Length: 107
Image 1: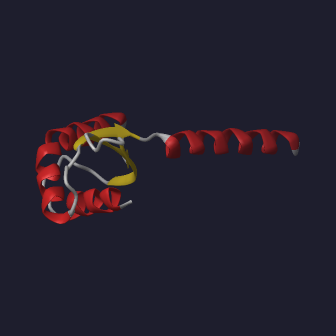
Image 2: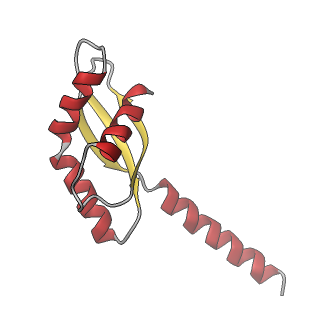
C-alpha cells in the first residue's frame, strides 16, 4: 500500500527526533471515506522506549500528513492514527513456549 511505504519513508528520512527509536511500519489501513489511516508500527526497545516512539509519532502526525499531501495524488489526505503492532512480540513468546515444550518432551 502506498500510504504504508510513504509514511515509512517519511519517518526514516524526514523525522529527526532522536526519541524515535528503531520503528518499522508494518501496515496501514485506510477507511473507505479516506478520513482516517491507521498506521501500524512495531518498535524495538523497552516498553518505555516503545511508548516514547509512539508518542513522538503521534505528535508528528500532522507533519507526516502534510508530507503525504506532497507525495500522494489523492483528493483527500487521511488523518493519521498510529497503532502499536505487537504481533512480533506475541510471535516470539509463542515460539519460546513451543521451544520449551519441545525441549521438555525430549527429556
